[in-house]
Length: 181
Image 1 (cartoon, rainbow, N blue to C red):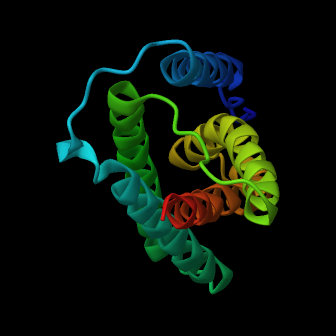
Image 2: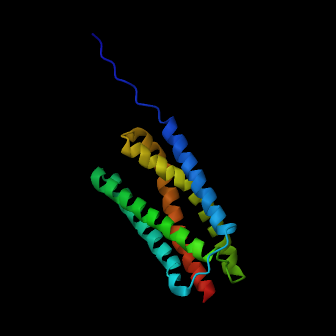
Image 3: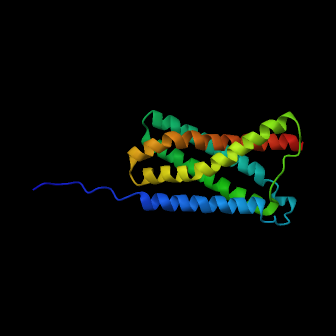
């Protein structure tokens, strides 16, 4: 009597669902920021951009701690750190949506050297955030479904991308605040 191991179920439906959700979320954010008129918000919600930067910064810290944990083969604390980073990023996304629903697009007010640094940084931040979303979700899917080999392969790309997006989110906020005076 021979025993065979059943193959793992296909990941294709989950990956397709993650890509569809990510595309829908990106399209919604594009519509919200660039097409939908902002609500007439009072200044009581002026704290949202700072909150967004704090949440991005906390996500970056949790990502870095998670990286240090996995490099020392401490899987449980790594997982906790990455879940924490995901939680901060999720809260960031909710706060970001609220801010743009209330205030719409925020234009960079200054010209000159700082603007020539700010705009390319912002463009890279936005484009890579669109790429990072499905990668983060796929990386979590592989980890949570026990597909550790696939998780490791994609995490090598997801980690620096997610960290870059988190850090540049803070930097663009600071640069915008400096320009606003």
